[in-house]
Image (cartoon, rainbow, N blue to C red; front, side):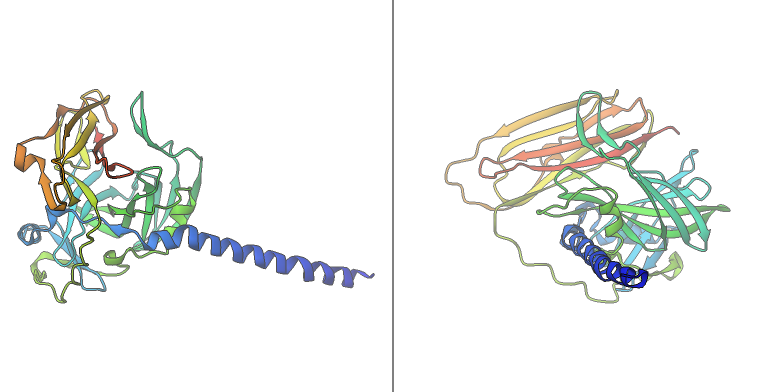
Length: 368
């Protein structure tokens, strides 16, 4: 057999195998990541659903807004800037119920929270972003709530309004942190990368493999966040929606519970006191075991547990239990001494449920 025939046989056998392998990998990624991501629901913070809150922020002197292709408006007030080059504000909308913390990072430094390692401006709003494990861990010296255990690093190009999953919030993948890049803004003559984040939830969860979950999440638009928009100044903001928001989905009458942690900021300064509370809501009973864990001033986890027995044969119903409003209860009450990433967790345990309902929220403590 001459060389030409040998090459023909090799190509006839191995090229199809290679194509099959590539196709199988793409299909596997689609069902492993894309399908579960499409089922994720962006978390809606009830504290920022008040239309008056949106008007208050949008009418501030230095506020700015942008609108998505679906005509959802998002506004933010002028950020609070820290000596470290980090600025923080809050993004809020009058046409969708999602909101989240907005970060401003000097373009000479770049964002470096969660799995973002660094970011380099290329041209306009286009940038190069690198993700890495960074030994990411949430917990203290004696316990770990969540940890990225595999080493990874990868770099990609990011454009304005690109959205991605930065990390999972738990090992089950039922909660992930979604980050969106909003491009470059200039404050007092300094250019900043703008990114904001919120949580997305799913009962089914997703496989939390890195960097695959981050890579595949770039193909998901996460609904109301949108991929394009136009920034406008506060003097031309229309505070009335230009389109009718979609109707509320039908209420699920199956027993279920939701916990929302309230009053907790994403960033505190060393020596600044933190406080928080929670709202338990759902369809079922508000009685059951409740456990709240949070860091003390040194960063060590402490907790508070309570339990209330249910009245026999009490019918289930829709309820909202705001422990701060109804009982005046808040937690934390300490000034953090050390920089770092900390977590508060609220768990509600009903005997009728196979698994307890849990909500966790991280916050960072930084040097001023």
